[in-house]
Length: 186
Image (cartoon, rainbow, N blue to C red; front, side, top):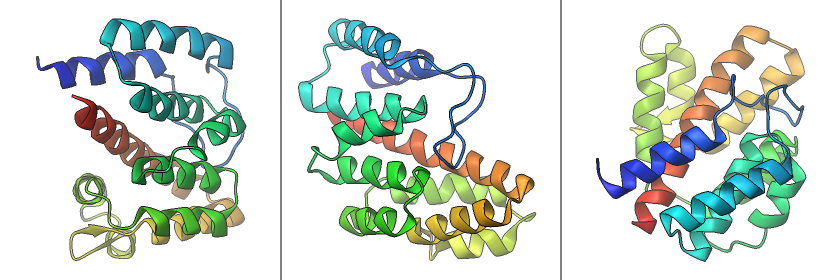
């Protein structure tokens, strides 16, 4: 197993929860406190020799995964990279502040991990939800602004089935970002 894969596996185990985050800021049961996460992350960073810039990105991601939206925001707003902007955008989408999420996704631009998101989302949606796939993936490219719109519509309408599917897509997006962050740090 490569160093990158070992780090990714260890990080995913560290932040694992019984279910993926909701589309909004609501807290789920089974998440770790900020103190628990910070302790686990400090140990992880020391054992895996993760650079300080990568540590900030991963800490923000872990806090966001565990529904600590404000704590994640405090970190991500200070990271002036495309990866930091992507985390910042996800945080605002979950807040929910959809306009601000779109602003931060515009700052991300065409991220090099977006094609990976598009591929995984296309595999998830395949034939069953073709209309949604066409809105979220255009010419093989992930359309994060369209995903923000879908999340907003699902939240406003209270469509539980759609929210569940969008949570799966949100997980794909999150995983792709974390994989990218760790790949860049290797």
